[in-house]
Image (cartoon, rainbow, N blue to C red; front, side, top):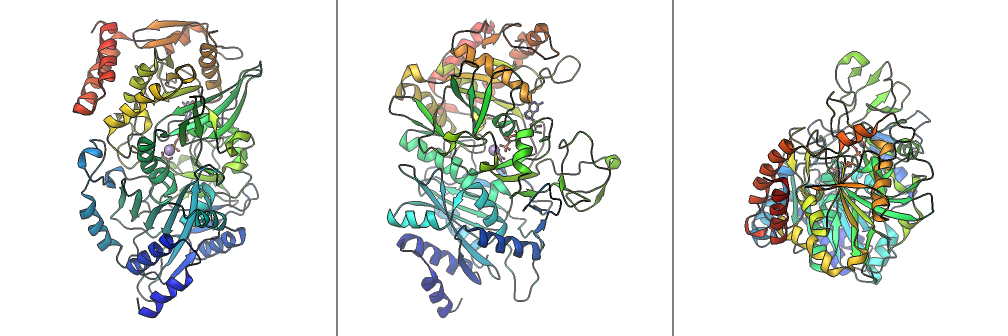
Amino acid sequence: MSESSDQKVIDAAPTTHAKLAAWVQEVAELTKPDHVYWVDGSQEENDRLTAELVKSGTLQKLTDPTFPNSFAAFSDPKDVARVEERTFICSEDKKDAGFTNNWEEPVKMKSMLTGIFDGAMRGRTMYVIPFVMGPLDAEAPQYGVELTDSAYVVTSMRIMARIGDDVLRKMETEDAFFVPALHSVGAPLADGQEDVAWPCNAEKWIVHFPEERSIWSYGSGYGGNALLGKKCYALRIASVMARDEGWLAEHMLILKLTNPEGKSYNVAAAFPSACGKTNLALLDPTIDGWKAETLGDDINWMRIGKEGELRGVNPEYGLFGVAPGTGWSTNPNAMRAITKGNSIFTNVALTDEGGVWWEGMTDEAPAHLTDWLGNDWTPDSGRPAAHPNSRFCTPISQVDMLAQEYYSPDGVEIHAILFGGRRKTTIPLVTQARSWTNGIFMGSTLSSETTAAAAGAVGVVRRDPMAMLPFIGYNAGDYLNHWDSIESKANPERLPKIFLVNWFRRNAEGGFAWPGFGDNSRVLKWAIDRIEGKADAVETPIGFVPTGDSIDLTGLDMTPAEVEAAVAVDKDEWDTELASIEEWYAKFGEALPVSLRGELDGLKERLGA
Ligand SMILES: Nc1nc2c(ncn2[C@@H]2O[C@H](COP(=O)(O)OP(=O)(O)OP(=O)(O)O)[C@@H](O)[C@H]2O)c(=O)[nH]1
Ligand SMILES: O=C([O-])CC(=O)C(=O)O
Ligand SMILES: [Mn+2]
């Protein structure tokens, strides 16, 4: 880059935030984009960017009026999910990354990445996206700035986070700290070189520097790797902030439930990726008199309130939901939000009418589609039309059932926490923890069959503590200890009650032991009735499970005996489970909190193992 164009970058910086201007300048000098553009977040700007993306072939405008002002994108077939093997936590001390994270010495990693980012944006525009996670009128707004060479990222970030001028102006007046989040698709263009629809690089790096609170992401354009406010900031970096400041940054939905007596309860639930958070967050209760309202579907920041209660805030602005399985019969609330438009779909199938489709959207598949790879598709093609991790990206404000408190910077009191995974056997439909620490034990040993949300094998059982395995930004043992310590920091009477759930258990015939989706309201009713001291339970070695007739089955073709089967604690299965938990806990070494070792010993004793 010539001196005069360097000068142009300095002159162009429309900010009085000296640190930000200097960082943008420094990155521009390193990555050498053709232009630097400051994103204002306006509708006109978004219209312009999406028009450019249509022209470059990255986006296709949907012409079916069912999906107004919406677009479809098709990624490189090798850039379809988060890449956990390429994700690093570069703490100064290796011990602080712990065994669940990849680690490299920060100085070494920085110098390596500096080499990789050198000239990475050549031939492209570098967009500067000021953003805030959570409401801008929060007591201490959590700012970030993403620098990216992808307009797809800009338009997606505009849905997923509050971005643009308002954020920048407030950041300037406060001279506020912001998380610097650098992203490049890693596909510089030589002079005259034609671009591809989805530029990316076979080599990917998703790197976090927790002490510095900074993020460097290279090579991928896909959601969790590229929309840096989401997993990288709001979970990995925020979990470290939360450790240092005494709060929790969690992979959780937040749902407000009001019972027929008019009393409201807020439930937070941690399920691994593609295990039902968005679906539960948009729950349509199938029991009379119960009302559900959405607060969040993926991330929950919980702080201790003035009265010692745990309060949750959803820091996001949109939904980045798994498309397959989201349908008019399973999740009508999501479908209503999506069909209001203003959405970006990635790796779904296209209908002949210029709309989108994915497995499970409708009961019957259309007779002809263009699949996510651009091939002709018919119902007997014998392969899915949409990628299993295809996504819809939709403003949360379009959710009809959005709770008013979503907009409140103070969030809501959390009354119950659910930990859940995808397990064919062993784990009952629902179990109430015996105590806070017993609930932390449940969370710490949470396990699930892997899904398409991350690159790698699907269907393998792995431990996923609090559904945060890929997102804990520090030592997992310290993380569990931090969770356990919340009990002494909060008002013990206001602590949420903890439950373990499993919507995915199979019955003897191989089908789901529980209908799931809207009927999960029946399980939530039981949990809330437990909090109110109204519902019956059986004490088992692992915790309290419902009696056969304590789950409301009104209008459901299911018997109390089937409920009993869905909550059964099988001795043989639990012997196997115990061995696997032992193995898991051994990995923590010294870092495992003593209290959790105690919980495991107690469980063994109760199981007579
Ligand atoms: N059987 C059954 N399947 C469910 C239920 N809830 C969700 N699913 C399926 O789980 C898959 C993913 O669900 P989501 O709600 O999108 O997952 P998520 O936890 O929000 O995922 P991320 O966005 O990756 O964090 C879909 O294929 C759903 O059909 C349920 O209650 N029962
Ligand atoms: O991060 C993503 O790309 C989507 C997501 O919510 C997850 O994988 O948990
Ligand atoms: Mn998620």
